[in-house]
Image 1 (cartoon, rainbow, N blue to C red):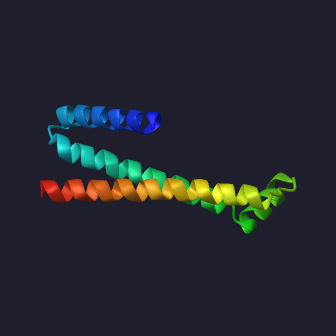
Image 2: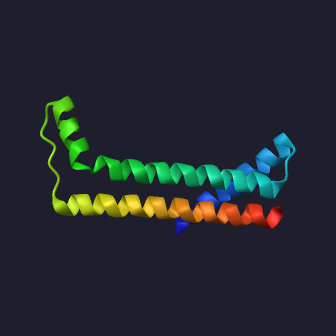
Length: 104
């Protein structure tokens, strides 16, 4: 929870600074910051999920010359982390969408 609070404070600071510099509304700047943040979270979740695929692991093994084996529990843990990042990204996207709808 401390991490989420810190990210929210940073988002508010970036939105305040950008609204002062670019002369846009604070709410519009906050919506844009949240939209960019949601895209980054979804990309991270997708990369985590993609990295756990068997084909990617085999390709990594071929390129590095090392055999890359992962247990089933490691793959499930990786999928759970990927789902968490993707879900957080989707929730932030919906939040920015609601913010945009409220200000339109």
